[in-house]
Amino acid sequence: MRLHVLVLVFLCLWCGGIGLGYIAFLTKAFSSSSEYNPAALTPFGMLLFAYALTMGGFKFESNKSKKYLLTLLEAELIDT
Image 1 (tube, rainbow, N blue to C red):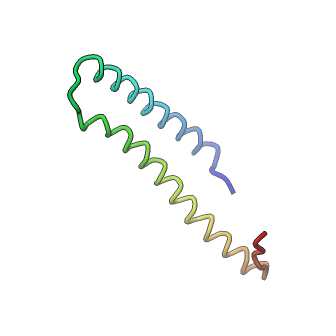
Image 2: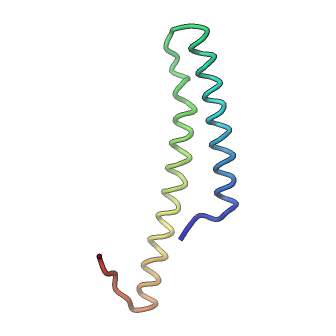
Image 3: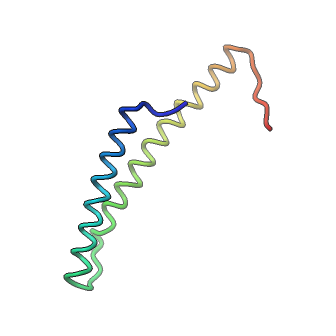
């Protein structure tokens, strides 16, 4: 199982935009002052949230589908 192509494209655009914005923010923050700014962690948190939301939803549905297919086909999982 894999993510739909449109979901992958959206995530690449979204996370790429956040990443570029984060790089621009960090270069400006480090060049202008040496003070710690807690807002610098916000884009990093957004990237982690996007990853967790995507993987959490995907794993939930893939595990549900795997259990359904095992029941439907009267199959067993074989650990190799």
